[in-house]
Length: 217
Image 1 (cartoon, one colour):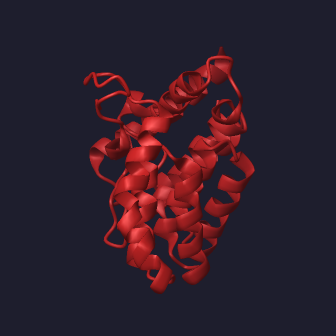
Image 2 (image 1 turned 90 degrees about the horizontal axis):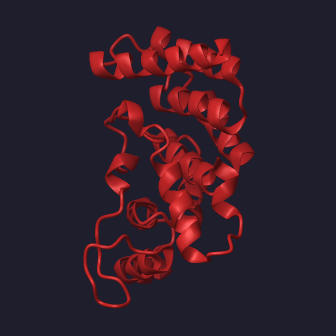
């Protein structure tokens, strides 16, 4: 559940990392995750599947172990540092803000990533792609209502946006336990996006079938 990501566990960062990894794999059973259902030309951010952490050296110097959140935070800070320095003299540079946000999202630093995506949508409120990124980061950080608010804003600007409708369904289902709302969102997605590829359409239909099946159990 999303709220588990911000709870304090007795095992410290290792426990928290496991929760974040579990959430990031929320929909991977159907080959999708909260983020981009398909890539649009306006999207400059990677789908969340690409953010799956790779084996990295641990504090003890052994490779092949899953890094802790602290390890990934250090890696992100190091990589983002030069870009953040550039932002000091060019704070409204959307390309730089996007790159920094992507780095933090890819390392599961969702709170940090949300900060940069939020700056982008303040500069460009109609940037639906970045609102989608912001919503997913808020959700993974435990702010379900904040994520829903961003999705609704996206749909205000683009009512047919497939990624927003997909995410709306996932958040309503997993974050609000609102199966009816999830099904309505996905039905609207399929209705308004006939160009959706066969595999993506099948994946959405699989999710809908799963929700309906659980509703009968």
